[in-house]
Amino acid sequence: MTNEQKILQEVFGFHSFRQNQEEIIRQILNGKDVFAVMPTGGGKSLCYQLPARILKGTAIVISPLISLMKDQVDAARDTGLKAEFLNSTLNTDERSEIYSNLTEGKIELLYIAPERFANKNFIETLKTIKITFFAIDEAHCISEWGHDFRPDYLSLSGIAENFPAAPVAAFTATATKIVQDDIIKKLRLRSPYTVRASFNRPNLVYSVQRKENINKQILNYLYEHKGVSGIVYRTTRDSVGKLYQFLSDNGISCLPYHAGIESETRKRNQEYFNQDKVDVIIATIAFGMGIDKSNVRYVIHGDLPKNIEGYYQETGRAGRDGEPADCILFYGSEDIIKMNYFINQMESEKERGIASQKLLRMSKYATYNVCRRTQLLEYFSETFPESNCKACDICLGTAEVIDITTEAQIFLSAVVRTGQKFGIKHIIGIITGAETKKVKELNHDKIKTYGAGSHKDRRFWHYIADELLAQNAVSREGEYPVLKLTEKGSEILTGKLNISGIKQAEIREKTKALEKSKSLFHEYNKNLFGDLRVLRKELATEQDVPPYIIFSDKTLHEMCAVNPRSMEDMKEISGIGKVKLEKYGKLFLDRIRFFTGE
Ligand code: ADP
Ligand code: MG
Image (cartoon, rainbow, N blue to C red; front, top):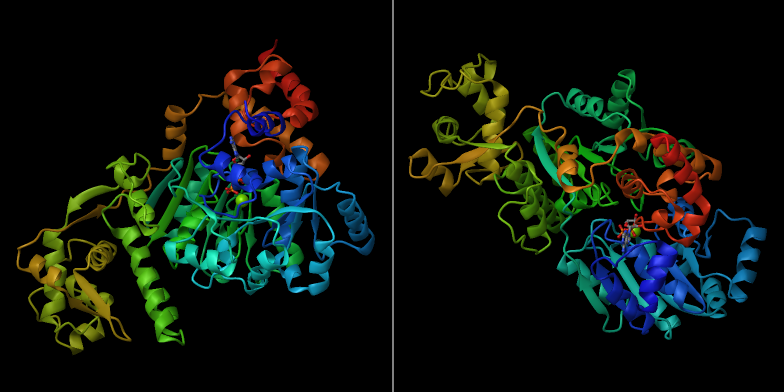
């Protein structure tokens, strides 16, 4: 057994390395720069925590958000690592104590916010201690090409020059190839050992549902998942506020989060969520960066995200512990109109172009009759090798495919007969035989397709419009988006080409992730799990840390499945190292014995 493997078991309590971890650690130990793209939950922290334990001196970890540093440090300490953080929340005494511990070499891991590196004095101070290496978390924040650019990160460019002896290891969960090259350049990494792990997250179950009565649809899902942690994203602060009101009126344990909420309250809401004091956080995308909560069981998007990077990152917050989790997107074509409006407000033409391309990819994800996982991976230049991923609505068959050629022809015909000068709403009005002023004034009640689709409702026709747009049968242009037929659209209209679309199931795939968990993972006793959760929560409250820091859901599930009877048994469970075994082993063992009546 190598020294690294020994420490993995003794300190972290894990039986084996995950993909790429061992090699990255070895490179850091050999003093080489590293650049690693690994999916959320892939185990990036271990890649710097483990060498920090081995090397003599202090490893510096740069992490973007001060508010989350405490959690990260608590988690590291709970494993027995000597970790501290330095940021503006500390007072002078606390700071000088840390400095003296640093000079005495008593700190293995020091977490620091990026803005500190803009300060020359700070850099001079850092030069006086023995630094083993730098780890840069969320490294994509340094690239303007990424979706989360933070100017503070630019000051990290100086690290390689200021500390030539220390290797730099950069980590991120989202980077296209362009962003990857940009990060390496900006951080001035010296021919880094580069890892581009698969972006696939096999435990995430992706699905898209037609957006109808969004608040109610979300409520239905949450009713079925009470007592389980999850995140619901909405685009605007207003929709967050309203949804929050609606859900709490209906007895859902939830809290809101957006940039408009006063910072103390916002912080508290995040903490309550982190500590399992509420089930659900309703948030704008301001929420989530660097959240390490491992037991998030679902991420719901009530609106179409701007781009796939963002969607992948947000859904990535589900199921970090490797257990099944749902990623549900509610989609309606009105979202595209709204987003296009905002894109059109952008100053630079180049930015507008990039933003619309990205939005188009996103809407294809929502509407295309193609495996969702394949589409996500394709975006990051990865080919998914299977034809059926078994964990998205398309592959699971919950999104049924139907032939929509006839309906498409009715729609396209109305577009052509009105001269390709109108938008979706008006076309649908014509097809459904609406008696609006506009229809009458333009004599559109006289054309052949008027009322030809009145056997279906407007929602259905919106859906047809979405499919036609996503499958490039029509294009939409102009200030008041006007529909025009593409070549493909003409072929469908003349009967040369058929088109099929996703039939939107009613909300019936709610429990997919849970069903999957039965087949793929240990069958575990739910009541015992409930008991252990309570114990975990008690311990967490005592120590004022989030429960998942004590043990992850995965560790608890395993306890319930294998039913350990001794401390020896306990030690075998994934996620229990020496320190945690001593701290919590007996407590959990007693609780299990009590439950099983032994
Ligand atoms: P990332 O930062 O890449 O999103 P984390 O470092 O937060 O992921 O790790 C996600 C989860 O995986 C954590 O609960 C962590 O303890 C666990 N983990 C990491 N490495 C291993 C391993 N080798 N075996 C089992 N679990 C692991
Ligand atoms: Mg991380």
